[in-house]
Length: 395
Ligand code: HEM
Image 1 (tube, rainbow, N blue to C red):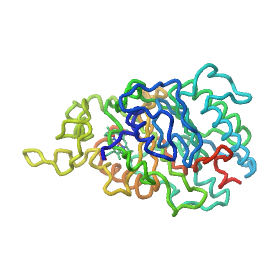
Image 2: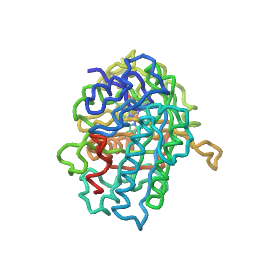
Image 3: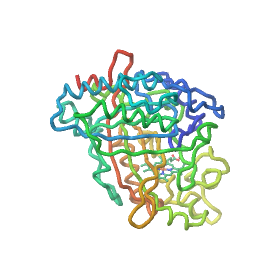
């Protein structure tokens, strides 16, 4: 089956096709590839076996917030927050008013708002719940320059919408409902391309590459496939998945000094069309065996796509990343790059070995610095409107 671009950068039509193939959480924005998507009006169903915001089409904006649990907070306090969050998220994603809201987005529609919640290993242990085998402490990766204040955390909330003002409102609602129980540890804002999303193209990242071409396929999404956990996970995770977040700064000055041919060898795809080297179209097969006339590998040994390509299905992950732009650094450059976001059923067989390969050999590493990193267990969805997020963990 053809690869469906899911992650990368807000890939409207293709992704919508993928999401409607997933019976467990069919978003309402099931537009055909290339069809215009109304970026302001649509609603993504909150309730389902799985949480929305994972296999549902990637919106143009993300707000990721990691919270720490206050020392004094009890299990009952946390359960109360989860119930309040579920109720508020269900209302906001449907376009309904919430009590005591800040009214920032009055008059705006949800614009495909999704709110997705997960927990960190530290909190699972503190609750005395069974720590899933896959919820490891991420190992140190060569080259990382992690800032602890931008890494880890007890609870994560991923919010996505096609309207950034909707996210600003939802963030105030969610954060205020956790006052006294949770404190914000870090927050990251990311964006894609509204143009690419509305007409179903793959978006570009800040290095100028088409990003999100080879991702999980429609048929993989329709099954439990590469994302949702299986029976090896504890009961409180049934219907859940694992989220990896990596805040990857791009050294754009260095990158932009390379000529296009070199940039293309670093990735293994052409910049203009996104075709694999040796191919002509973005959707062409990435042929790792192909050789140039002189016998050298067409897709170089140290190119990103060669090293990132899953060596078996257990390495599959679904990328759903965004670009970010942040503060001016002391050297006068702007801190900007990729908020790498991936969902996978088992990071120990997918993200971790792939990242180890990239850290050791990827030609792209010369142009990136990873400054934030986290792994969270994403809670199961709420199958019915009387359920609340995390009931099997916090009750
Ligand atoms: C593919 C860019 C980091 C995993 C790609 C492609 C680009 C790209 C342009 C080719 C288009 C596509 O298939 O989506 C980047 C940039 C990164 C980055 C700019 C950092 C700033 C990562 C990381 C991982 C990763 C950290 C995982 C550990 C993958 C995978 C593919 C891919 C699995 C698809 C390979 C295939 O099967 O063809 N990336 N990437 N990337 N990337 Fe990255």
